[in-house]
Length: 397
Image (cartoon, rainbow, N blue to C red; front, side, top):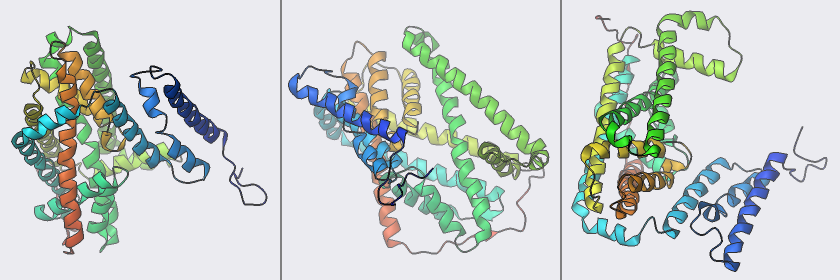
C-alpha cells in the first residue's frame, strides 16, 4: 500500500517510522531533563544519544534515505558521550601529540595496510585472469581510502575500484566484483585467527576476569560459526557448484549464496592464491597491531605486557569493525576504553589513553584518506588492464 494519500501531496509515515520518530522525541525529552536535574542519567549513554537519531528520523519522515544519517549521528553521539564523561581527555590527546614521533611512526606503519591490500587484490585478480600492476593497485586502494574515510558508507572505495578497472570493458565487471567481494570476505577469518591467538596465549590472564571469559566464549562461538560457514561455502564452491546452479534459487539469500559460490569456484584449480591472500591478510593485521603498539607508546599505556596487548587490541578491533557507525567511529573508542580499563585496574589512566590510542589510528586513516583525495583530484592516468582468455591454473592442484 502506498504511503502517499489520494492527493499525492503528503507522505504518510509507516508505523515503524512513527515509532522511530517517537523514540527520538523521547530521547530529546530525557536530554531536556538534564537542564532541570543535572544529575539525571549522569554519565549514562542515553542522554548523548538523545539528539543522535533525530536527524535520521526527520529524514525518514520526509522519505529521504536515513541509514547513512543514522550511522553518522550514532558515531557522533558516542564521541560526544566519551568526551562528556571524561573518557576522552584533551590532556591525553595533548600528551599523545607531544610524543608525535611515535604517532608518526605508527601512521607510517599503517601504510602497510594499503601495500598488503594492493598485493592481496592483485593476487585475486590474477586468479580471474586479469593483470593489473601493483603500483596501479596501490593508487586505486589509496583513492579508495579517500572514499571510505570521507564519504558516508564503507564501500565507496570498493565501487571506485570496480568502476576504474572495468569501465573500458564491461565484461570485467563480474570478475572484478568477485575479487573485491573475496577481498572483504577473507579479511574476517584472518582477524579472528589473531584474536583467538591473543586469547590462547593469555588464557591464564583472561580467566581472572569474568568479562574476559565472556569475550573469549563469544569469540569462540563466533569463530566456530565462521569455520562452519566457510567450510560450507568452500565445499560448495569446489564440489557442488554445478548442482547448486540447477536449483534455480528464488530467494535473495539463495541467489546471494550461489553468487558467492560461483565467485570462489574460479579459484578451484588455483587454491594457492587463496592461501596466499590469507597469509597476506595476516601480515596486514599484524602491521595494524604494530601501529597500535606505537600509538600505545605515544599515549603512555602502562603495566601491560605485549602479549596481553595482542588480546586487548584485536578484541577492540573486532568491535570496531562491526558495521554500526562509519568506520566504527565512537564504538571503537568506547570498546578500547572499556577493555583496557578492565585489564589494568591499577592504572586507571589506561582507559583514557586507550581511547586516544584509537583516535591516533583514526588520524592515520584520515592522513591516507587525504592523500587518496589528492591523488583522485590530480591524477587522470588511465588504468591499463590485461585480460587473459582463461584464468591461470595451478598445475600443482
